[in-house]
Length: 224
Length: 390
Image (cartoon, rainbow over all chains, first blue to last red; front, side):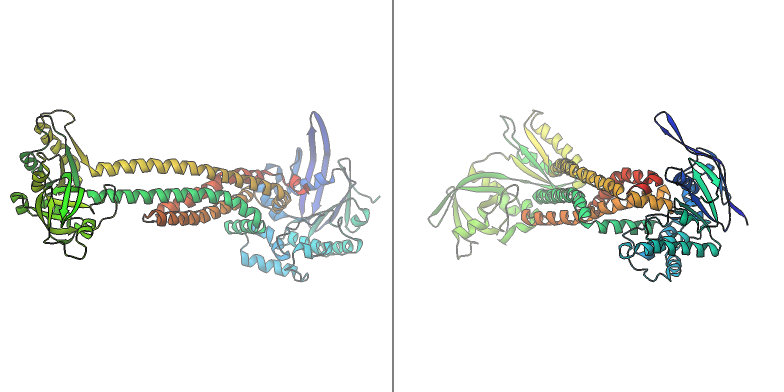
């Protein structure tokens, strides 16, 4: 198994007036290809910040972060956008589908920025949505579970290195949540690396490896 | 990528159709007023210029007030003036008012103009019937008359005026021609005028000197050198006294009018572009609202891999679309207004490529200038803040 993510001594600080607020302190993390990792922590533990840094939406104050052989700290805005496009597939708690686009067009969206031709885009989006069958529906015509399935389809359609999910079941009922977790398991079984951020121990239990985060410190986790 | 951005921009515009339309109005009004004003002023200028040209763009008018000793031009002066280079000839105008009697009908204050053969040779289209003045008439001071169309109707209703005899200031004249009816022009019409050989007119009216002269140019491009030559001759004819004569070149007049209307166009267009500025601010306002509304969308697009430049392009294209749309509608409406004005004011309506380029260029520029700041704002949004924004 090859290593696809390596964080060394990641520190993230925010400055409120003169006060320094350490959100992440000395985080070290290694993730190999094909892993299913949960990062478990209560709100305010720094897990969202960690997710933003993993997802290249934010950069650390100090430390070294290598993602799929890219040294992230050396990259500018444009290159970060390219990394997000190619290496990361985001799944959000509130789905974040564009309401003006139908399911198919939403799935095509990241491929636009990857420069895939229109014909190829449609072909790939149709292929990945084949089981969902409601590909011409708009988000407000879909249930929460269906919307999240479309969002997951959107996140994997570019074949990213990591699937990064932020509380993916947070806005769903019990049953839909279970189905979504099942989908993540299937994707992981197909060899996809999944990193999931959650505060819910029951959800975290679906993964193969659990990391606890508390007050900005990450620890290899026994379940609590 | 450009095509995608255009598609996305269009989708957003059509989704907010009412708001987009109201924003478009600002640019529309600005462009429409600029196009209408420019087209109307150009049309009116064209009409004035062609009226002046119809008075004779190939003519130079000489007016000689003369000195106390020499109150006008002599035959010798006229001969000299007609021999200037690039001049094909001169035609004096002797004018005055007198009474006219025909068959016991009396008309007073009839305008009489004395002309020569050259005048009727040059102004080919003025006769409705009969003949004009020829050189024999001038040399022999023949008592012949060419009458205006209204006079012909009034005096000779139902009979052919040609061959009839009229009394002008007590002298008998034979009518040999009738002038065509003319519309009102800057110099008035000749519908109530009687034209005589200028020599006969001088005798009948008791005029001794010629004070008014048209110089016909054979090459209108040489008008300046001709004017100089004429001035030289006239100066020596009047002993270099000041204010004894004037040389009026029609081309100069056309140029002056062109300058005035050019300035007028600029002034009006300047005023109209204020509304374009207001329209631009409207676009900027709408785009800023749009960026705020779509903060989450922008964050998502960034998370999915949109580069800042791509976000900026999308918003810029949106504002250019709106502005161009306003520009094109404004162009059409402006031209329609100008067309209506052309029909009412009776000038020729013309669309120039220049007008279209101006409208499209102006509106595109407005879209770029006023769309730039909102688009830049969108591209600089931090994706984390943007995603958290609900």
